[in-house]
Length: 432
Image (cartoon, rainbow, N blue to C red; front, side, top):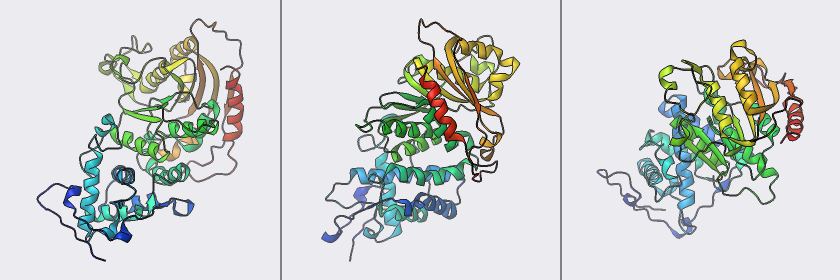
């Protein structure tokens, strides 16, 4: 078997620089969907990047994400009668193969050819920052498999095997543990026609889980209309959220790289009172100072304040995003709901939402991710305009005692999360 490959060293990477000839029997290589037996494929690729190029964990995941998008582009853009470009056997050297990979990434950043939207392209660096050896090794792991035709569940599990260790290695502030995400989604029970937003979306796991939950009750399947919106300030994490969305076959999700506290007049896509459900876990512990507060025009709770915890502003913004009658599930430090100096926050809440439930989380919930703050989940419904704000209703109070793992993250038998989720769901349903 012979192939001709010409590389022009003085030219940028381009597919036109690859003069590859194929024999007829090589015109199409059938790719195999991922299955449970090969769920470690992403983790294996991650480990090769780490070991070959020695990058920090956060950069390893970012580079892996770029290569997964390149793989998607190859599958989406290759005609059925043409060979895929990401096949190592059609190149006569690792250098030629690496050049083809870089050329596909260049194509990814061209609006007319990309699988990314125009605003998403702006979130991506202009280059892949990996050695040729690492590039070839990773794509060689992927080359026999199809991502576009693999089930979303198996892709999601495979990706979480990469994300979970990352969240324990300095990126924990961007992630919410799976049991907490599933509990909150099951409790608010999103319907397939409803719009959902996470204003602090991190890796967008709330959106992916909500989309799957809604699809269970949708006999027509998930439509392509955008109904799940994530807002994430970090470009790297927004890129990660995009990958999570694509792996879940989520054409109905949009990830916006922006500060969710931006004044509404400066948002193109986000409007006040526009979402059926808010699912979120805002960042804790940061204090927004007076200079930054002056730039925020839409938030009532900051009036007269010189400093403000970020989670309080995140709570108000979450409620602003809800439609009247919309449902809220948000993770908060317990102090907001109990400390005396937070009374003004609770008074504001009662004017704007009907608090339906408060569920305490065990202390170890966020311990494996580097946080030791006591937290609770607040479930609520936004008052409708003109609605009588009666206080004569039942407030569900509870506490999860076993989240399914211990303080070090090791699995723990006897989790009581799902039993409580059923009770919360039934309680919320009485008021919406």
